[in-house]
Structure formats: C-alpha cells, structure tokens
Length: 229
Image (tube, rainbow, N blue to C red; front, side, top):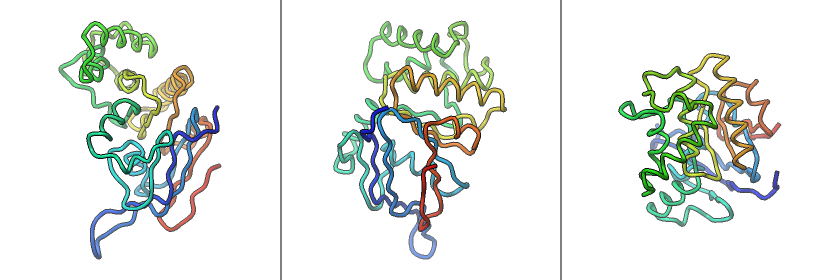
C-alpha cells in the first residue's frame, strides 16, 4: 500500500442549522487516507460519519477547512467540475441498495456507463464483467424484487465499480443485512478493493467488520479528539 494520501482533510468543520438550533457535527477534523488503504470509520450515531463521506464524496462542502483528493484542493472547483470529478473518480455504496426497480441487475450496473455516454454494448460488457466478479452472472436478468437482500447489495457494489473509480465510499453497506450476508458482502468489498486497487472508506457500526479493515478511524463528537487504532 502506498503512503501517498489520496484523501486529505485539513481543519474540516461542518454544522447544520443556525443560531440557537445550530449543531456542530465535525470540528477542525484532520484525516489522511493513504492510496490503497481500506479504512473503517466508526463512532456513535449522530457523530458525523455520513457527513464525512458526503464531504469526501463531493456531495457537500465543509463550512471551514480543505478537502484534497489526489493532491487537488476540491473546494476551489465549481459545481460542474465537482460533478465531473465525482463521476470519474468516486464510487458510492449506501445502506439501501437504491437499485432501479424497472431495470434488471445487468442494466442497473450498466446505468452509470450509459449516463456517461458509453454505448450499450460497452456498458453491458462491463456489467457482465462485474456480475461475474460478484458471483451473480446467473442473476443478470433478475429484477431487484427477485433478488435477496444480499444479492441486491452485491449488485449495488458492482454498480459502484462500473466506472472504474479510484475511491470507494460505503455508508453502512451491510446495515440492512443479517450476519451471514453482512460478512459475505464485506468480504466481497475487501476482495474487490484489492483486485481493483481501490482506496476505500467504509462507515460501519460493526466493530467486528471494522477490525477486518487496514485501519480504523474513531469519529467522536465535535470538540473531542479523533484517533486511529
């Protein structure tokens, strides 16, 4: 694993609301994620784990501080440039799969490529590669309601990798699954992380799964210190 940081946060703060109702979620946060690292982010509910992913994933901006991706300060980019960088560089997996009910597994995976302007043949070829990678080739033409919860999430992981991102962000990707399916999906994420040479940040409440990552970042309420273990 390279020690070059793909993701850097310096003095990042983020709050919500105004006046007496304002809540500071992240306060003066520093974080380095080396290229190739599989990092778990853990902490109590409401501490800002999802907010952290939204900032790294260019879905939101910090109130203060700087987010750097691959050495570039992304806070100087306008909305269009941020969207282009996000689509090119970052894959997302959420707690809910967010698959489109009207598309089968293959077309759900192919969708990001089609949106990016790739031809149908290229998009479906890439989808077929990923279906094989997540062991769902025989489910290619099944629709989301015909898949189990674990299968739905495996399709979601495959879709996140469709554009060959360098950075994978996963927000409680096993949160809706039972223990057996949680372990299967997490093992799959770890395997694909290595095979694709990704840098991955995974938010999880599951300390056992977090220990399977390269490192763990404990996020605590704003104003307290944070630490790796």
